[in-house]
Amino acid sequence: MREMANYQATHFKWHCEDGIAVISLDRPERKNPLTFDSYAELRDCFRALAYADDIKAVVFGSNGGNFCSGGDVHDIIGPLVKMDMKSLLEFTRMTGDLVKAIIHCGKPVIAAVDGVCVGAGAIIAMASDLRLAATNAKTAFLFTRVGLAGCDMGACAILPRIIGQGRAAELLYTGRSMSAEEGERWGFYNRIVVAEELDAEALKLAKRLAEGPTFGHMMTKTMLNQEWCMSIDQAIEAEAQAQAICMQTQDFERAYKAFVAHQTPVFEGN
View 1 (cartoon, helix red, strand yellow):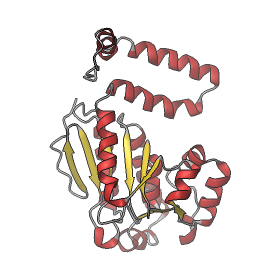
View 2 (view 1 turned 180 degrees about the vertical axis):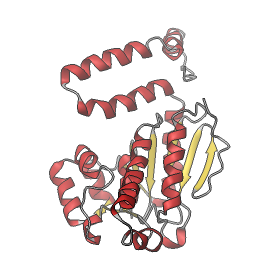
View 3 (view 1 turned 45 degrees about the horizontal axis):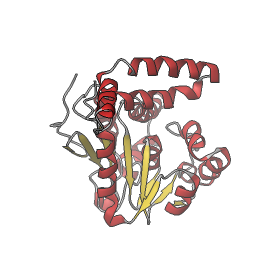
View 4 (view 1 turned 90 degrees about the horizontal axis):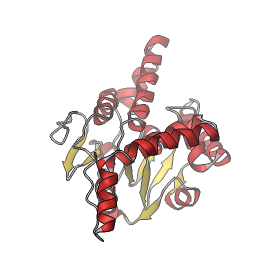
């Protein structure tokens, strides 16, 4: 087990309150682009979160009215055009490892998206479990607009599962912007809120999750991601095993005793 409430981030903003970690990129003057360093530290941070029992939920928020403008043109795109194939593959694998780390961190991750959310920023939102959007959020998987393929950081695997194959194909081929209203209608965004209430609503949702059975949430997240690769029979058996494990937790017993006593259960994550 590792405690991360007092984690000191170097390349992004981090704070923790009541078991909820709040992350945001910290270059608001440039709409929060990612750099080589922030990519790597975010990857390592989410990997560590898998072992942090003091963190119950994560909010990946916006800063200065924007979520993320993707990879920094000068700090990332410029150097990439000068790299050899070995170095390029190391970079693309590292960015993909960030998505893997978010998926496997064992905590529900909520993206609170305001303003610009494009490129790798859209991928981070996509990799999150739940997504809230401000009314002015603009989301674009714009890789083809810079001469690349739409298949970046798992986009061709994950985005169709969220919004459907045809809609994902349109966004990935064209690189066009998806509005908040369109994103909610397509199922990318769970809910739209006014920008002034975005942070509060994300924290409210995170608090609700943090007060729930966090071991059960970890198992839910695990199965949501693993079952895409299973047959129906395999999935049903995997869920039988997962639920049997959860039935041995003290939280399950706490819920039963609270129900009998007509009380609200207080979960402790074990």
